[in-house]
Image (cartoon, rainbow, N blue to C red; front, side, top):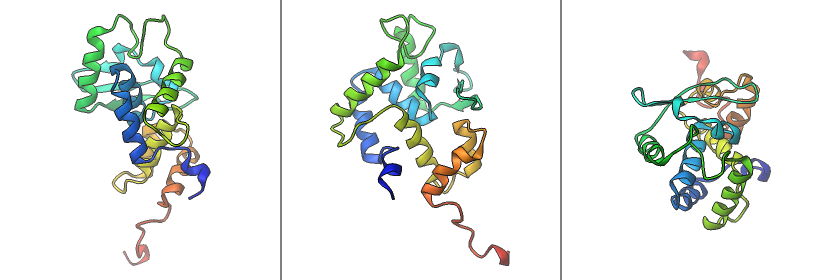
Length: 181
């Protein structure tokens, strides 16, 4: 695999290290966990509002940017627990908030830089790597079909998803002797 492809996403060990380092703060942990699990771009993360959470259905509305398709994603039990904890102390309409009026992409970049050091990563880590890690891991899961990866990440054009599928070597995987069936 080429260095440029591998540098776009975190390995399992790197992701685990970043998640562990992020546990120093509920907000930082939410930034990493939600971004990774839902393939969020930084602006999509910062646009998340409390009224996007459907507590009854255990879902969150992902408002995509860059012409991508928005939609609801299921929330895991640990995400719901974390969100309830954040909500308890929140004085903002936004899930990711702080003392400053508007939580900025610059602040997320700074947090990622700090997490990179705390996680003792051998290379720089930036927020968008979490989205690439999500796409990469989904594409490498044989139980998840490429159309699901595309829809989950909000890609309108399948060419955006094809990068992950090609990297995973799944283009023609598991076809078997299709002509005999």
